[in-house]
Image (cartoon, rainbow, N blue to C red):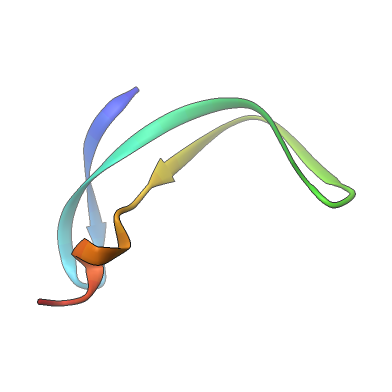
Length: 46
């Protein structure tokens, strides 16, 4: 899906959004979800 602007508590940041067919954590699974990758270094408020 590519880069998008995301509003966070610290302001507007650019983040990549991806569509994931399946994500499993332990016994919990979800299908066809969107996930956002945020660079945490850009969210430190500086």
